[in-house]
Amino acid sequence: MAQVKRYMALDFGAESGRAIAAAFDGKKMDLEILRRFSTDSTTMLGTLYWDFPSFIRNIKLGLSAYAGKYGSDLAGIACDSWGVDFGLLDKTGHLLANPVHYRDARTNGIPEKLHAVIPARTLYQRTGIQIMSFNTIYQLYAMVLNNSPLLDKAVSMLLIADLASYFLSGTPVQEYTTATTSEMYDAERMDWSRDSLLSAKIPPGMMPEIVAPGTVIGPLLDSVAAECGLGPTPIIAPGSHDTASAVAAVPAEGEDWLYVSSGTWSLMGAELAAPIINDATFNANFTNEGGVDGTIRFLKNISGMWMLQECRRAWAKEEGQAADYETLARLAEEAAPFVRFVNPNGERFLAPGGMPERINAALRETGQPEAKEKGEFARLCFESLALAYRHTAQTVEELTGKKYNVLHIVGGGSLNTLLNQLAADATGMVVKAGPVEATALGNSLMQAVALGDVASLSEARQVVRDSVQVKTFEPKGDRSRWDEMYSRFQQLL
Image (cartoon, rainbow, N blue to C red; front, side):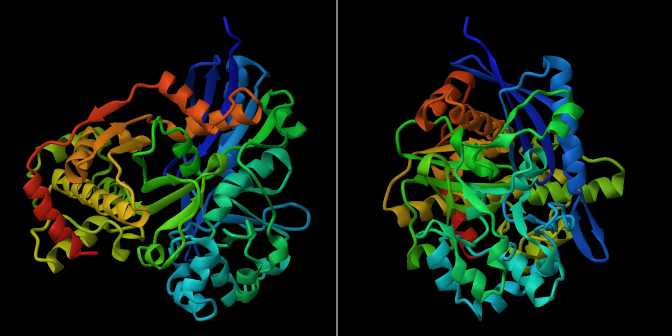
């Protein structure tokens, strides 16, 4: 019997985080959630902050839970998270302030101000990253314009996953896949874009060394190991951007496939060997983020389950408890189809709070009936997402000059059978749903690659196929109705 090795994947999402133990027998990988926790944020004096100390506390509780169950022997630990948000360290290595949430209002109007200094097309040519108001460069430029004293004190800037890895290892490095989300990474020079930093008056000296996915950063700090009951465990940089880890775990074969990493955001695109940076991709606002094993994640950020998550929060505030997603999916299935939709990427839906009212305001403005019941709101969210998937798939085909026939949906959204079927119906593609825990699988597999237990990305994907069951959804239903809906949807873009 093959010896089982265990890795710990610490996965931070915009709604929740997990400490997940992955057991690998050389062929299959089994996951076990040891701790699940909320990734909380709160507003103080008008600024929306992440509660980063609670992230570290929950990491330690997750590691302690592992030690309590399996002992001190652990093959590796790796952190992944969303991109763009960051923490600043001072010369003593301490965190200067809690990281600010990407949905904070401080970047309102900032892209236009920065583009007066660095034209948008120039910035895109350097980075290949889609312009989104909350990208790291705009957050930092907001601090520059506000004369933030933190920039004078900072000696290192680390994005969230690598900030967590720093507090486990004591080594301040930035992993490549997350670095690319900042819109400060030069895709041609393959390093921080010094020209952009200097033009924006962002101190280049606080940009850390960039390391490749699958790099062993260093050992777990003795103090943390002692606190949690672990031995000298390697801290590893996976694809530390959660989507990079999720795409690494797409159980795909061949080359005619697209992916959606489905959660708060739906990140949809193709895996390429090199970035595509030209006028067409700039005008379509497509991004070229770094992937594992030398790949590029050519994709579009689509606001995924965010609208429904915010509706749930609003209903919970009114009713004292939140409707669970399974119930909402059932109510959506019972609701009438093809009644109403919105552009999920509309600016009006970006900020938190008051989502049902904002959705209905958009419906009134476009001459559509307002939603009243929870199922109507949920149906609207799912059909709107399916239409956004169709638009994105067609755009990818136009920009790459290639036809795609299979859509892999991974992550938490792959559990939503209604949305999966709607995606198949809207796009006309075969949808393959799963794995649910794609990010944790990809994170753990990149640890295995780093330690020589798995040879390559293709071998890692074979492990995924051996480890999980994928559910297939064939297109069905009235295609002409979808064509009619899509024609109307395009007018909202």
